[in-house]
Each structure stands twice: as structure tokens, then as C-alpha cells.
Image (cartoon, rainbow, N blue to C red):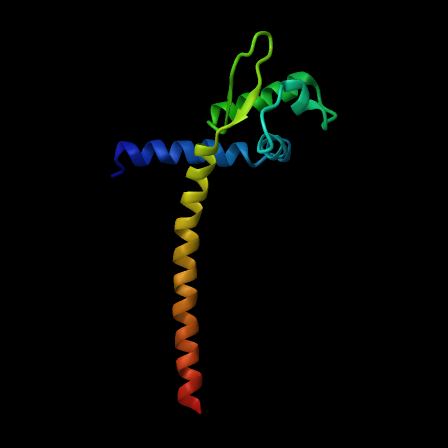
Length: 117
């Protein structure tokens, strides 16, 4: 049975990967990687309503991928680098395992070539 930490991680990963499944939200993340942006700045490249942009921002915020702050009347959005790091860490775990398997297979194949000589 899963412990609470694994359940929490699974839920965070599910929300984050679901959020990143949309090209508009991925573009917003890419834009935020260059620095904070307002809703209007995030909406600029898209021909969608402000309401749709707000929904996308809400999904990203709920997934923990972005945060919002208050600066007088401005409410800029910020990328949550720690959340992206958690995603890449999870991906890297499986990438490294796959690379290890490939290296072992390469070694076996190389050994077979040497034996055939």
C-alpha cells in the first residue's frame, strides 16, 4: 500500500501532467520561464477570451506550476521552478533506468561481437 508521501506525489504529478497536456498552458509556462507576467501579457499571443486565459491560469495554479503575487493592482504570475524540478526528477528516474538497460544491452552485444571474431 502507498504511504501518504507517495499518494501526495502521485496527485501532484497527475495535476501537473494534466495541466501540461494543453498547448496553451505549455506556452504560458514557456513565457513564464522568461520572467513574471500579468494575465494580459499571458493572453497576448492567443486568440482566446480573457475568461479562457483565466481558466488556464487557474489550472496551472491548482497544479502548483505557477504562483501569483500582488503588486498594488497587478497580480503577476510566476513560474514555480520547484514544481518543474519535481517533474523532471520523476522523469529522470525512469530515463536513467532506461539508459542503464541500454548500456547493459550494448555491452552484451559488444561482447557477442567480440566472441564471433
